[in-house]
Length: 120
Length: 107
Image (cartoon, rainbow over all chains, first blue to last red):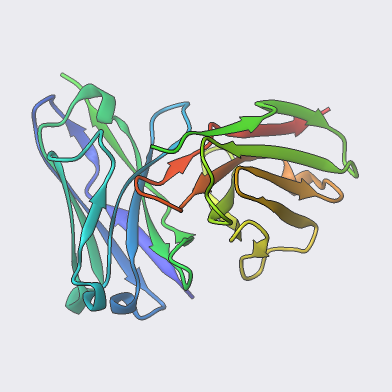
């Protein structure tokens, strides 16, 4: 069974940093692209970014709203995906989901999400 | 960036109804279009990719069509478990973008 479990969320002050993790199981993590998607309270879905697999040099893509502040990384030996968030703003408050890129590189499985609140 | 719009933004329907949701891209995206279902307080669920291909385990009452800029999601016979918000997403070009969502509730 494919499982993705996020952790590391919480309350952080504006300008602060936070690192989210996503532990995966039930599939060969190293083969897949992985995404982060977020959802502000009461709002729609916003794609945050993607990291490709080793075969594609672990290259990354980001939304303009987070580029230069957020960094996506992965550790295939630990079946884990990460989102390092720096210089956080109140508008980064959201539930953050990790998601798997499937065989056609489109999202097919989602984690349950983790809440990040940026507030003073 | 490619802008995605959806119509309607919400709709009320009855169990057994046929429901169609439209998604439009601001520029051509071939068939690189996905649909997701989200229930309140839950993670999204992937329904359709490549505009018309069902994800594994998704019932055949869901269908998708379209290419280029105009796409539709159809639920052939609405059931109680289908009341949710539906989002389209283009994955033709980075940054990927979602539509604003269509909320389907009970009439």
